[in-house]
Length: 613
Image (cartoon, rainbow, N blue to C red; front, side, top):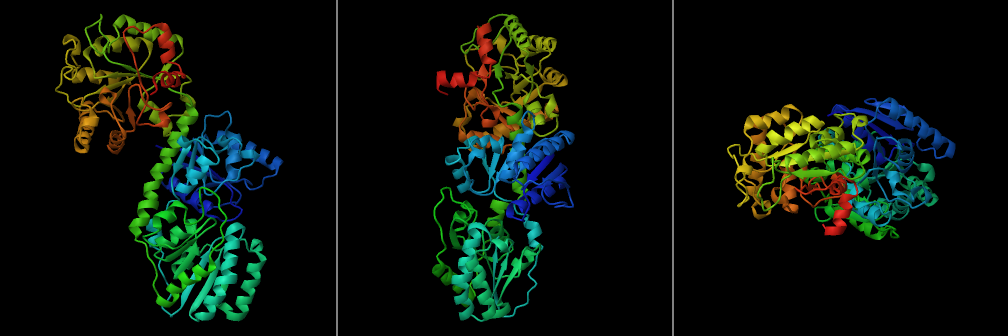
């Protein structure tokens, strides 16, 4: 799997979003993807191809030129997915991608302001990554971005890299507090409160205390903060200093005793084993401990609340909390395992790629892909209480109809290949549909296979993993002669001409009635047996009798399948829920009109309206 990924971002100053984008891009390149970056700064990274683009320049003519240049890059580099990391980046990427098959994914790092350019939330693309749960709520409730587009994925941390940054400061009896963050906007105002109302008291009372302020945008720092800082320097000399922007911020934090900050700053400081006082644009959590870590994660350590509320730091309380560290030398620590659970880069990177995959398919196929469910294809009508058959003659009528509509068959393996970059986006059919056959009946080999070959269709066979079974033993009262199942060689014949084989358990049980252990056995054993016997990769699973619930879906995902295929239930599109794929039953008496309905993109909504499921 190799994607061609273009990251677009504003980098006129080095914010957490820039660090996030660089980390993703460089890791994706190391993992074998072809990665490009379009941004303000030339040579922002020496590990990936960087293209200079004044993303931050919002003048109309420059934006139009940015769109033109970006569109050219996307076309010439055959980009698979564009990942935007700022509002300006999302805006130009959205317009550059109009009319193409390339999707847009946006990562949003903070609350978004409503204005005319954002009246349509489509500006953020097919998938939107929100870095904390409170941001998800804001984007859903206030910007009305569709919930199925939203993904919560925190800023990842390369824990192993951070472990290599060691504290080099010798024990000298001092306590160093580092305030890390840009000095403009709300953060700058809050830091100004610290400089004017908290640090004068602490520096006066504790001669062993030193304070350093790390971050850019000094010009935008509130005047009250600048005046207070100058006064403190005149009184305490180099016990308070402004470091400014530096690439050595991790080393400076590692040599601190307390770091005051939010967002990525707080995460990295905690990973370095440093006590963190979480204060951001939206709220203050104070000293981070095991008691408030989940709440802090929820707001990205104080930067984001789902509903904007006025916030000004309680400087008296802050002084009291910091004093416990200075006087008692009691520095709160968070177990690395807690951070790794939430922020490990190795855990989050596959989820980022999965988000790309979903975005690709949302763009390629924004409507419903018809998924049709067949069982038997006998020579003549058979006795069956469930009517799960279509005669050979009628099945050929179905195939002729599909051909007349210009439908092109794909499999779930094909779908996956397009979604992960193994097949070029330009080859995705304009009118895709998926033929599926459950159980592997013998008449599938004798009647169905020759007809599908004749009309140029392939599909998916969902088979039991029990290769000793030679007939349908789960539907009592069915026609015995019609229940015979193919042997191994006959099943292999389908694979040889491009069919996909999916799993359908070992014994065809109602999974919702089984324990977790029994379900996992049915799932894992069926997949393993099919892969070993038929030498094919199994990525899809069909729920027996179409019965499933949230627990079963989760176990199917846990077992390593990519898709869970339902019956008469599920999402409007495959990307609504890959583990509840809507599939429609095909019956003996299908008419041309019913075939038209069942292969139309409106059918899922119609079915939901008519049946309520």
